[in-house]
Amino acid sequence: MAVWRLIHGGKDVIVSNALAEIQHESICGSRLITLPDSGHGIVYDQLSEFNSVFMKSIAD
Image (tube, rainbow, N blue to C red; front, side, top):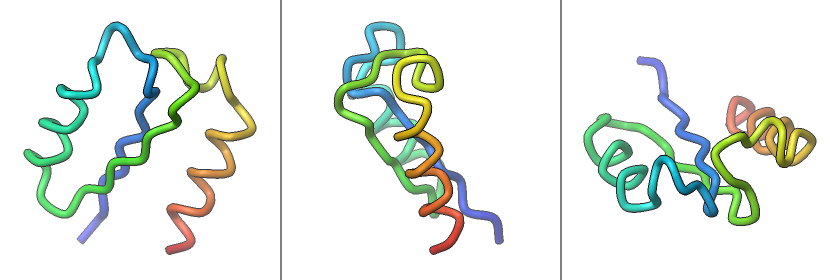
């Protein structure tokens, strides 16, 4: 079974932290990973942090 990874920006004003949590709880077996200093455009705000978190998450 595939594991869904939700990588969310903690400062996202489009998708709130509460909505990210609801999405996480709604997807069985998902993992919610929050980058606290990023907004909605994670790959623009913190590309290297995103890549690092993503690569670590698929290695687990």
